[in-house]
Amino acid sequence: GGRTTYSDWILGLVNDFQLKNSSTHFYDLNAKLDYSINANNRISAFAYFSNDFFHYSGNAEYDYGNIIGAVKWDHALSERVSGRMSLNMSRYDARVADFSQAYWEHSLRTSIDQKQFSYHLSSNAFVRHHLNGGLGIIHSAIQPGSSVPYNNQSMADTIFLRDENALEFNVYVEDEWDLTPDLGLIA
Image (cartoon, rainbow, N blue to C red):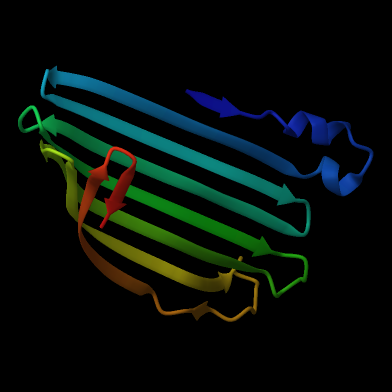
C-alpha cells in the first residue's frame, strides 16, 4: 500500500508570496507478506517507509522519514511447544535547514538506528503451568546531531556531536501457574 499528497498545487492558490513559492510532500509505503511453509512453520515480513518534506520559501526546510522492517518465523516444535524468532530494524532521520539569515545558513541532522533479534519459546506441556521464555539483543546507534553549512557561501560552523551506541541483552523466564480454577500466579 502507499499514500501520497499533492499539496503543492494548494500552496500555489494561496495569496501569500512565501507560501506560493514553498513546496511540500508527504508519502508512505508499506508491505506485508505472510507465507505458510507447512503446518508447523510460517514466515511473515513487514516493511514501512515514510518521508515528509516542507520547504518554506526563503526560510527553512524540514525533511524527516522512517524506515521499519521486520521478519518473523513462527514454528511449532511439538503440539505443546512453539517458538518465534524475530528480526527487526528501524531508522529515523531528521533534517532541518535554516537559511533565513544570509551567510549563516546551516543544516541540522539527527538519526536513530535500531536492530533487534529475539527468540521466544512457549510451552503448555505441564498441567496448570504455561511456561514462556526467551532472549534478545538490541543494538541502537544514535547520531544526536550535526550542524553543517547549508551552502558554500555560509559562514556557519560545522559541529558534530559524537555518535552514541548501545547494546542491550535480555533473558526472561515466566510461569503462568493456575493455583485454583479462580486464582492464578504469574512469576
